[in-house]
Amino acid sequence: MPVRKRSLIFQIVMLLLLPLSTAFSQKYVVSTARQGDGVYAMLRRYYLPTNKQYIDFFHSLNSQLFQQHGSLQVGRRYKMPIRRYVFNGKNIRSTLGISDYNLAKKIELYNKKVRRAGLKKKSYKVGKDLWVPYFYLPNMKQQVEPKNGREYSLFGPKYKTVDPIDHQLQGCVYYLVSGHGGPDPGAIGLWGKHRLCEDEYAYDAMLRLGRNLLQHGAKVYIIVRDPNDGIRDERFLKCDQDEYYYGNVRISASRVARLNKRASIINSLYARNKGSARLQNVIILHVDSRSNNKRIDIFYYYKKRSRAGKSLAKLLYQTVKDKYAEVQPGRGYRGSVTTRDLHMLRKIKPTTVYIELGNIRNRRDQDRFIQQNNRQAVANWLYLGLLKASKK
Image (cartoon, rainbow, N blue to C red; front, side, top):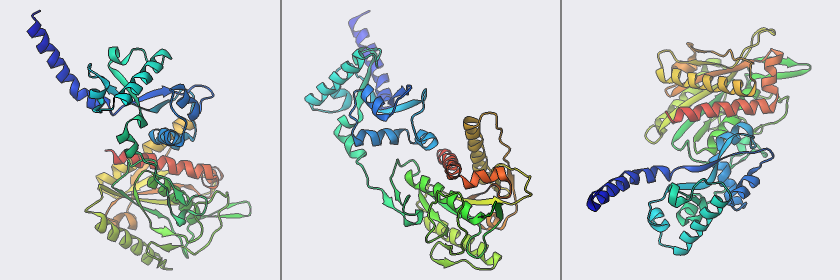
């Protein structure tokens, strides 16, 4: 083949590779957790520092897995704080757009070390796969500078500090409404001598969901609020009547007035955020009351003829169903997604899903409420569904 033709083919191949370099640079090295692994062990295996910066970023990269399980799971694949770039065939500096020779040499030595350890099959020159520990590059350090968590007194002393994990929900606005409150406790269940008030358990699950959403950059409005409850880990939550509405508005004794006020507050905030939000959703949490022997799964209502409401309700339903299949194989899930002509669904303007968490009078359903781990799991699963919906 003539030299000129070979040169032309080489140039075409390089041009085809250029767009791939940008896409590839967004990927991370992925590793499977082994028996006995923790975050420290995985970082050390890849010759990475085990300081707070790397540990925090590892958690950030794998936030959804930690939300689901809280610790590393054997056999699961985790993103490592190592970026992958397509080597351009020339040198590391031109591949990464840097001029620092010593830094390029440091990156080269790192790639040789992981290659010798068997973590990479080929050298970066042969496989064109260049690994760069995330904090090697100065611009990366600026992007993930640690941020101090904000404090929200509404979550109570134990949970008031909310540390940001990522910004996946940036621009998303959520209005969270727990059922009843104030002079109306809602449905009442009994566990021995303990009274289980619907408004208290719906409120606790709702606060946990709100905290999850805030950790990922969302703007969250808690519509029904309690000045002193916060997120509580007790099994039996004290029933009280000191709740109020967003804006320090008293909750009326009139049912119609209560519902109208909630809708009015949400619609006013919706109009205020309409120009800046990329989406606005309302999640209403209730606990149903049926006969003692009637066990039910979480079910969902949406407004008639609301395609967005139906889509969101179905996605939340499917997410919870999938999570039950994962954590309780063979259990089955009998939730449902239907329309219903409810005042709050009719009057609220943003896309709304009305959720019933179970039967407060059924002993097996009560476990879903009185166990704080179960309340947190429900909040985690609903968050995951909302996260999926935000990407559609």
